[in-house]
Image (cartoon, rainbow, N blue to C red):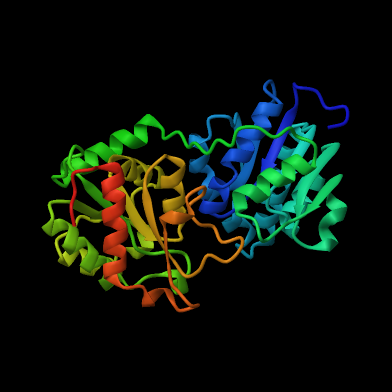
Length: 336
């Protein structure tokens, strides 16, 4: 680590997405272990900033407002760029770690002026931005990739800790949602997050509704989550009589999952958040190709489409069986 001391001023960069920001949690812990006296700041996109409230080892957050950069207004773009540049320089960072390694993050790492700049090199033309650039290994899970970057740059290995600490306020709002929708947190509850960021990763909604009906008939409470833009798409769920939390803040979704017994859904940030909170999940996935972001440390929690087939080929019976095994592990009193 060269001449670096314990009292460092460290900037970590991961702009997007929800899942990828969450995957830095063990790496943040590793940085804290190696620099217990450091001030750790995290640079991320504005929409992901609320997540950092659950990173107990992060001391400060800098946000990048992507909407302003994409506004098309030259004055707005310049204003945002200069504001971000000033915040980076004002930080007087001694070390920057760029977990993303894209062109924009490579520039941000370089513009920080930090004497030590470590980066995951996504393209060979970006190595110039770093004092230590590590070629990213796409065969590794994202978490292992970030940890490998730190170790190759000289940090000591240690315990892998993937722990998201949900703020009390978010959990209280989730409890209020339960009460308002006649849900009892003491009863077995299935939380379903049916949509992902990519249509090709989505299992058919009608299959999720079939799963929900099955478990409701066995005495399990069921609720569906989603983003604000998914309210209309979730109307069939509402018509089927299931509560829908689409549009609540991300951390409140975290609270709803925290109160639930089991989380079911596709490869989406919400499920990776559930894993980081210690919740049991069943993730419906297209594949387990090297580097696929399965539930970290729990590849057996994924239900996989076989023989290279589409995710829609997964049968509801297979998912019901996977949920039954999960309920048996965690609840012990739910039968299929």
